[in-house]
Length: 336
Image 1: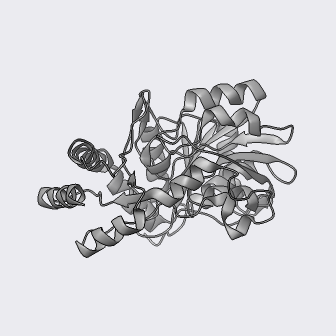
Image 2: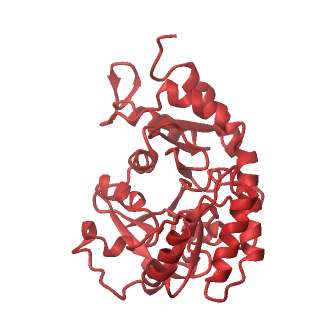
């Protein structure tokens, strides 16, 4: 077609993804961090504002806040779900606070009812970071439809991944959607008419076309991940391994199957010797990263996130994982 940017394939995918999430609008963009940044900019959040984020997640969530000139305020996590702990949010709210960004970490929705209740009490916005939770359900509703807006990443390793960087924002707020789209298109609602100080972050046609096809298979792929996770949860019985837990009302899509152990380094070495690949999501809490030195945090500030970072390790889980490989992983872990 010789149409490469913002044409029919992008429109088709945006409409399909919005319908999938149960929202009125999806806006494609360059990547997941841009999706959060665009939402914050379109919501007029910037210098002098605070935004609450969890301490244990990928740094992009906080970097988006920093990118718009606001300050990320880190809150500790629930030790069982690894998501932001709602019991600790109110203590972090000040007159500067404008929004909460709960991350649906590893594919499990955050405790959105409690988070939205707090947000309503203090008149705050709730923006979901759904980068790891494509297709997950919270009390019957898809992630991406649970707050004022949501951000998705389609990085190739995600449950719904493109062939390169790309992302999307979702919302039921038509005015917000129009502004998000404009800011990601050089600030222009109409070509050469620049209403906002925007930047370039758009979903190209090739990525949108691939995503449109892959979206049709996402539920099937998530079901496969769930079946692998069910086996891990039932059959890994080594007392040294602390298994993840599914919170009530949550439908986990298992972007990552993270376990904890006191002997993480030895355990990882053992699995490597058995030719079982592992990753650590994430070895350093955001508040202790060098990028956020001088923000008033130190070791001991957020103890659950810090302890989790020293113990957590992710096991293999992916669509099409053969039963014999699942057997092997389980058997080797139980023999550890």
